[in-house]
Every structure is written in structure tokens, then in C-alpha cells.
Image 1 (cartoon, rainbow, N blue to C red):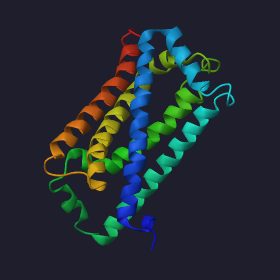
Image 2: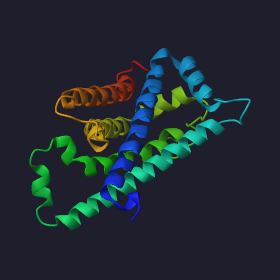
Image 3: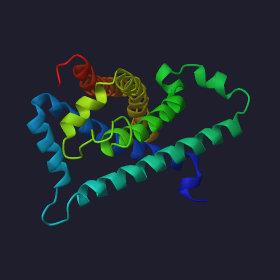
Image 4: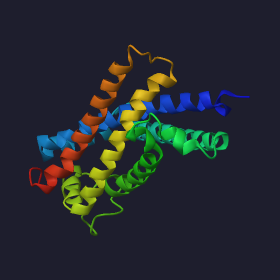
Length: 224
């Protein structure tokens, strides 16, 4: 029996990959906030991301390596989550939902649905602002004009509404994930539980408010 085949191994994989993904989400959010510094600085930041490691490595190679790592972490995280859910249902097929609800938080009870919403959002977000395959009229999307892409993309109210809803789901996911990772890794105690819950709350609120501020600013004409 391998570690991966056990529930403990799958939980450990979820914890480690979750930390990688949360770290990316926070960094991505901080980068998004540069949109408030104006078009020139935001586009310069986007260009810098593509040129990290240059000239030692080729154009955007470090960026694509980071994307590959994130993709791997995401796939492992989802696979582990699905397999853990199946293992739980097999072990407790009838009373699982009732037992799960007792003493659980709203965030923990919505982890699976939240994860599905986030996955669908990530796919749409990549097609939308990374590749310009959806949400733009022909010729509107300009790969080197990231600021204008953001403004045009979020000027459509229902796109911004979907983005905001996805960020709320992400916030709930992060809250439960950040708190539970310490339990999974055996680092949580009665004394530290409150500290970890505060950390989870601050992390999730920062990500939600930071990311939501961008489409809201576009809709209000602050970023234009």
C-alpha cells in the first residue's frame, strides 16, 4: 500500500497543493491591485512577468513553468478531493451528510460545490483574460494591452457578477482550507486553533476584497 492510496496520504497531498495554490492566489491578487496604479504601470508589470529570468531563459519560459506547476498542483488537489469524497461515501453511504453537518461550518459544508464553481471559473478566467477566447468582440483583445483587456472584460456586468460570485466561493474555500491544513499536518491544538482561524479569516477576506475591488472599480468607472 502506497501513501497515496491512504486517506492520510490524500489529505497530505491536498494540504501541500492547497498551500501552493493559496500562495499563488495571494500573489496574483497583489499583482491585480497594480491596476489601480494606472495603465502604464499595470502593463509594465504584466510585461515583467513574461520576462522573468530573461535573458538567461527564453521569453515567458519561467511564466509557463509556474503555470505548469500550478496546473499540476490543481490536478492533484482535485483528484485527491474527489477520491477522498468517494472514500467517505463508501465508508458512510447513508449517514455521511448528516454527520458532516454536525459541528461543521458553512465553509466546510460547501467545499465540494465551491471547488466545482472555482474550477469552472478558472477555466473561464483563462479563456477570458489570459487567451482572449471569450468575452471580447473580434479584434478587441490585445495580448500586450492587459489593462485595456481588464477594463473591457469587466465592463460587462454579468461577467463581473460571475467573477464576484466566484471570489466569494474562493474565499469560503480558502477559509476552510487554510484552517484545516494545520489539522491535516498535525499542527493544530486547542491553544492554536483560534490563531489559525483568525489567519484563515484574514487570508480569505484579503483575497475576496482585493480581487472583487477590480471589477467593482471598473463598473464604477474608477478604473477606465
